[in-house]
Length: 376
Image 1 (cartoon, one colour):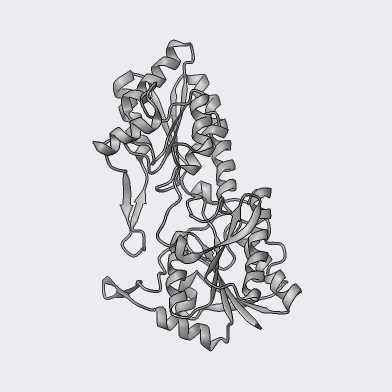
Image 2 (image 1 turned 60 degrees about the vertical axis):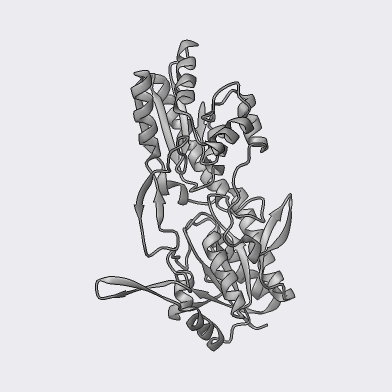
């Protein structure tokens, strides 16, 4: 192999540049292989926008957030949005992407991204494109790996925000509600909620009972704790209710943009307890900034292993962390699936042991509450 491509797809997160650095340096230092970087994810491969990346290009980017290549969460090669007149039409540009890949004389592609990128890559593999995937997302919701890079950085950012909110919550005796990203998985809310000392943590996997939430707040007040911290995942929703959709972007493979459930929770708590609530939505703050030391190391390990896998001919695989070891998972097993929080997960058990309310009635086993909700 003499030339490989690399792209960063989906939403950005800390650690993307660390992976690019590792890919370029490993390819050059270990194998004397050149790396072609595509701009803006699969959009660059489809539109033939690229540049060669040298050791010099990736020097000094380890600590930088974002991605020097740019990214796009709308560039699905099989459903590519093209503006015709005043409306978008969706075209299959997968064969164009393959032609561009072949014209550049590339031997393989390293695709860095989340579930959307892995799904697109699995489809491109079926067209004959040799691909190795690298798992990225602050949501930590990819199956086949214990952790994705970007997650730890987002947890640290969210925890720092919760720490700061604690002081004003205590001063004003308020219920402070912090909303974090995570989409349909509660890993980010659960982890930052535990790390930040949240009193109530609401996640998508456990539809919440607002009366249970209010009871937890009132019990804290009765015990002399005149403030409460509520950490809410953007996909959290009430029992029997729906997730709160902020808006829809039809040109995106995942058109739904969640957001705003914290305001709904605040209004309900105020109405049922007469206690003043304040809402903070962290939003894209969680995607930005320099990666943590953990994410820098993880991203570096992922990037170097991706190149080694390419050189060994292990195509169609996604690099994965399993325990403390780097392994791999077939991309076909990742595409279209989500890794979500389970009731028996150690973090959930730890939260319950600490007396944290997860939005379910107290004294009722969590599996029983969820089974009842599913039946209803």
